[in-house]
Amino acid sequence: MGQVRVLSEAEVRRLVTPLEAQQAVEQAFQDFANGISRMAARVTVPIPGVAGNIRVLPAVNVLPIPRPIPPTRSYLGVKVYTGYVGPVFKDRSKDRFTVLLYNTATGTLLAVVAARFLGALRTGATAAVATKYMASPGAKTLAVVGTGEQAETQVTNLAALLRPDRVIATSRNAANREAFARRLAEAGLKVEVTADAERAVREADVICLATTSREPVIAAEWVRPGSHINAIGANLANRREVDAALVRRSRVVVEYREQALQEAGDLVIPVKAGEWTADRIAAELGEIVTRAKPGRTAEDEITLFKSIGVAIEDVAVAILVYEKAVVEGVGTVVEM
Image (cartoon, rainbow, N blue to C red; front, side, top):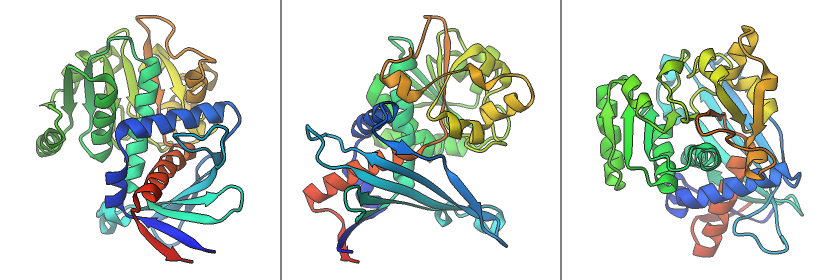
């Protein structure tokens, strides 16, 4: 099979910045909208006898950033990960995330990339791309609901994009809020923390929801006209972070309709209840990035980006990591 480069979590963290990830994701959505890249919706297979599953996200013909002109190379890729639930699986390290990269022309395996942090980074990068096209010009106050790893990469990505005047974080656990603020302070970002989610949302121009809640964490009446929302936490059909009233008030954009209507509980639940219809999805992100459709149609419009994570995001950022690793001589090269 030849030489395969193996990249660890620590190496991935060192190799890519939020702005680089945003550029890769934005180009990937443009290529997908233009029919260059292809992907399939996530495949989830339950594991018999265990409270868990294996999930697979494949993408084909994803191009690198920065790009040779004309393109001289492209990649196939697949993200594979396992997820377990229940008391015995409380240790999140038991969730294994990996991206496999292949040469499109030959089908040769090129890299095995650790993808736990990469997954959080690409989610933050994708939300930043959506915010770039959908938020009101001059948005300067950011609120994040949730204080976990995904919330952290939301803030680092949006801080790099927006240069916000204020960042407000809220979650139910005071210790988690304080630890979140300390971690971001180490990265040079000042974060206000509060237990009052309503206050945080009412004061924000851009609102990020990064929780695993099964019930809405914000109410429609808290959201000011002209606000933009990134709802990235609920990626199962039985979870939601926003209520049907807020979905109805918003211009809704998704990454990939097919997958969103399978997995995005924020949308699936109101559709099943007859409170909203799927034809009201305004656009896919690729249509916004290529400007085939507008991200925002009025100054006072509420915009909602519903993200669940799709294959081209993982593969695009993994390509960026891999190509930088080759140039810098990072990683472990093994013969397969």
